Image 1 (tube, rainbow, N blue to C red):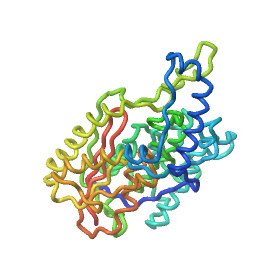
Image 2 (image 1 turned 90 degrees about the vertical axis):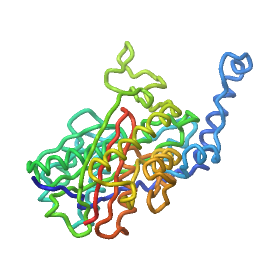
Image 3 (image 1 turned 90 degrees about the horizontal axis):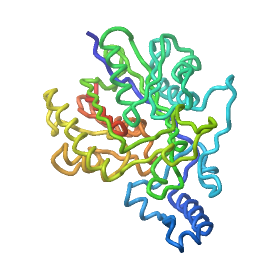
Length: 373
């Protein structure tokens, strides 16, 4: 049986940035307009006023300070409050494929891996711009790759599940190498008019090249073990699917058609579940938490990450042990842990042990134990 390795990564980051200051000003303008328009109902007690947001509230609730997006103009316009992305013809490269191609090219350039050796492309993301044809096949064609390609969606755990799928194929000998991409346009499924979540998400794309261990370049990461877990919960949900239509066939303007969650329940349930998954995964492979040099966790909420890290290590993790990119990128769904890995792994020496871990809607969680070559 072949062993698998992460040869390297690439990250595509949109140029446009929304600061908390800009976001608060936009949201508060919309909320003020809404409250003015519903002043009589508010005075009569039949509706509740929209609460105001603040930079202090956002940082305390999440640790987020800014986020990258594909379109900030639409998001910051109080009359629109969502990204406005031009519709592309069927002959043009899709926006997710465009992001993925950029991230993949960076990964190929950084690793020196020959694209001709890629036998599989996996597009693993929490949202897809269409049902079919697969985004992964579009990426495959745009990059001139051979083999096969397919899409998968496990929400915020899509990347770690994608790594396990690719690693398993390499281990079995069915492929030599795989490209796994995570184009996340989270700004399009966020309700920017909801004060409790209007700050959460950003856009980005990551790419991971996986190869046989013998083909990985120096400085790559051997994949020692992978583990995935799921447990059904509606506490994080998005009902925007092709079956959701009104009687006349149009999409309903309903709050549940976009991202929504029961944040307190998620925090209470996911933290112990993920901590136990990581701890058991390490123990089952003969490792103790003290063996870890670094943890690259899903970037959703700083307080959640801090608590998971503390539960795994038995003490508060240092910034070096558990790097955080949340303040600059916000929650980028499946791409978050890969951004952290891409930006905070080159400094570790050969033999260093680490864990890439994701968790999110489903519930879903993925743990990948790696060791620097």
